[in-house]
Length: 354
Ligand SMILES: *Cc1c(COP(=O)(O)O)cnc(C)c1O
Image 1: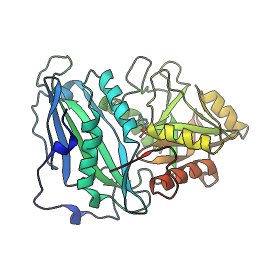
Image 2 (image 1 turned 135 degrees about the horizontal axis):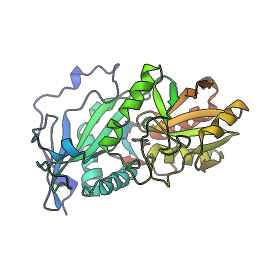
Image 3 (image 1 turned 90 degrees about the horizontal axis):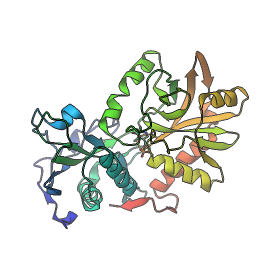
Image 4 (image 1 turned 90 degrees about the vertical axis):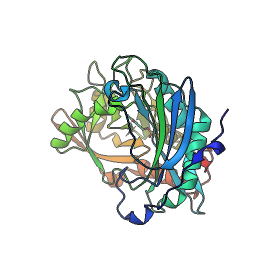
């Protein structure tokens, strides 16, 4: 079996790092000097290389472009207070990546390529990790089909890549959310649980219409009744009602199994706050709001960690939340940050050293 130490590195001639404005790092806009690239053919991953970040040359009949065999992951790496570099729970992302791959009839990516490749790439690019609050090095592994063919069938060849992007906070401001009752993100039996590119293309119309009305994102509802709450934009969603946290359950396969979602559930349990993973519908939420029991609403995801929600708009009515009072969401966010920066012990073994 190949090992990460065998990955060939082609050196850059000159680093772009001095061009970077460290005070202005929008999410996913700037990339580091190197990228990892590997090709899949005849049942194995070959030509694994770390090379200067550069454009790809692709056949215009590439099946990924026409039929969408394309998946990705999002992970963050941090420097802790002692200047050591850690990746947050990347093995969870590897598991999910391979579930996405399976659903899309794509090959598995082995640990030596995904994890060790990522570590080697980050090791080479350590100087790009921002040492600022709410900043990180965003890691983007992805895979797409590379057969050049207009027939619809699983491709026989694929490319796997990892990019690194020094990044600031994703949603800095508390969000205003439109409860979506027309468009659908995912249905049972579909691909909602996989992080495949098409899910995001399919969500743009709803998000764009919500933005025209002054909202940041939508709160997705189920495909049948448009009542059962799913996710908020590209984040999992939590509701705090009567000091209990509720988050939609995963069984139907319409929701992404967020790594942050899982970490938040664990931290809430550590704090002695009970968490219910169950179906929750909009009527229950409105009732809880009207009786003053709906305390906090927040989204969770790698990009933002926790994004506070200041407004939910449903059926012509606003539900407003004072984000200054969102004690639990802020507490969980701080705990996760402190674990990442080495200010709290990593009791759940979430950090992987580069
Ligand atoms: C990536 C993603 C999430 C968040 O998952 P994390 O592992 O926490 O980053 C939630 N929902 C959707 C649709 C996503 O694509």
